[in-house]
Length: 197
Image (cartoon, rainbow, N blue to C red; front, top):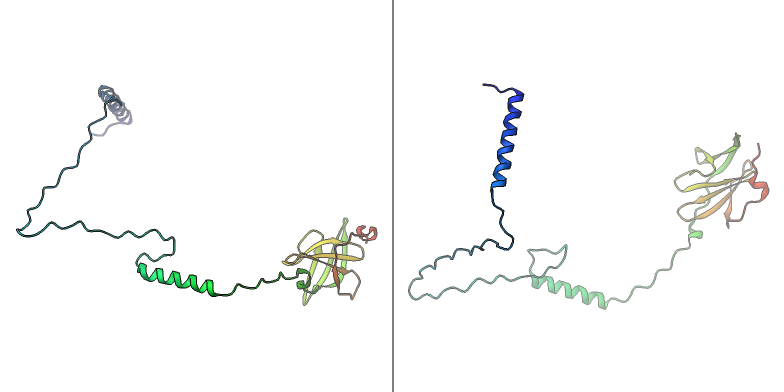
């Protein structure tokens, strides 16, 4: 016989009431009277054959934790020998000479761009450059290539930052001119800051 939804919910309610009543009927245990701890059952002693002594408990050697990368199945004696040999080799080796820091300004490559032309629209200048067979559009504040960032576009020059080395380069905006020497970060002149068509 199938029960309707209403009958099922009535049965659930009755079951919930009976469960609550059973929970209230059980007396809670006092915290001051904890249950008695059960002692583990004692294993009966085995009868040993006549003339045999009881065996001593098996002693398992404990190895201290050696950290990650240590072979848990390796021989401790061989590991100790390898560790001392490595320490002696490190002590016998002469100290390494300090490596001088490379001069980043000298490591900056020459500027690989050539000026092609310029376009100004709504006050924003775009400079077109040749990089080998490719043609690139330079806009102030945007990266030109993954290594070069366009810092400033003036009327006569384009300033680029070589990102890996932090070297600034100045490219003259005149037809047929290549890169000039890296700039020392000089402040722009008034003629360079104004935009012109």
